[in-house]
Length: 329
Ligand code: SF4
Image (cartoon, rainbow, N blue to C red; front, side):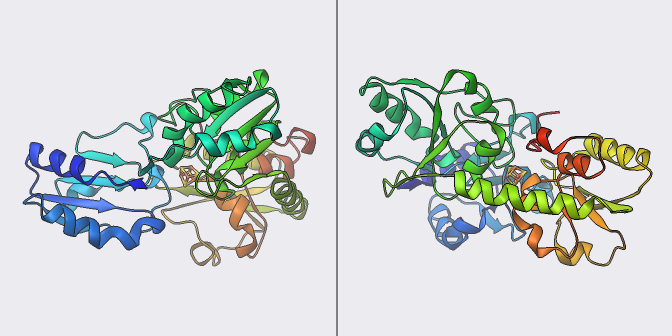
């Protein structure tokens, strides 16, 4: 169902003559790691090593793979083109390869006339048949190309919905192909259009509005609690696709210009354990914006994105709240 492309990986390893290959997988694919190695070991002469650190996206690509192996196979995400890609790294997206036309047609009467299609990377391969299915019902269907943080037309990351922004003015709503709320929420925060989620496996259709509104209320509460903060930790990630040093320098400058103190903490993993010891009234996350938005309840003080911090210190109005998307530098 989700194509791990074992034959393609084996051919890549053999053609290039790699003797050692590291593999990196997100949590959801880790149960398959040993089976993947068993399969590849039967088709190549390479040794395989599992990278055990957490991996949440291509932003987490283990760029130091040469410390342990000649090449890296990164599963579950597409490359982030703006990060640059080593020729010794192979991304295996684990595409879902079933025809979902019937499921799309079954929900078409709940969609407006002009529809934008979006998907997580696993389902970008389904966009073509979903588009044809919707067009067969007389609808106009647009699929936007995002910026260089995304690799495929219609693809949305949890930190980047530029594919939706590209066509938002020309559609009445978006149909998002995927599971869960994480990626659709990026689109819901990034564009002011209804977002309907179609689970390509179950065929269930639901909207993301309630989840979005609940999260927005929580973000408002966090900003309000940070308004009296006199000091801020500005957390900067060392991960290659989350390191936003220029944005961090900008928010440090803005915090200090507002008469408050800012202290930069540079680290790989933003977590309550790694930040709890530092004395400050609030924390600004300049890494993955979803750490602040989705995990704030785990922290002992207000934990804000960059744009939320701007509201808290009074240089941006709440009415101008915007998603702290990561853009290509
Ligand atoms: S920065 Fe966050 S949302 Fe963006 S790709 Fe990485 S883990 Fe996903």
